[in-house]
Image (cartoon, helix red, strand yellow):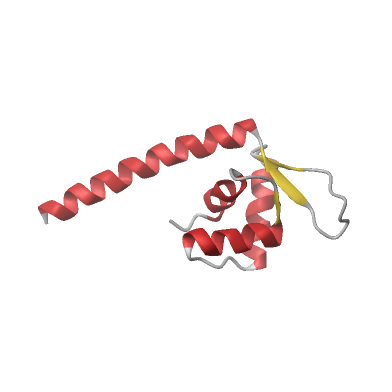
Length: 96
């Protein structure tokens, strides 16, 4: 699983985070290191779709983001699709 958008949403389920914290979290739970361009491109797309939004920060250098209700629903739907794919692949591997 390497879709940057899904990885960012998955990171934000745990709570608000700024870009670097999202990148570190993704590396820890997925074993993937997203480059800054990939990460911030995904953040921009997710924000445009209304799935995440910036939250006020006392630190002017770092912009934290939060998962919106729409983002949570989208992630849940994507997880159902991924679960179907995993079940199908596992079943097919057993038959091969």
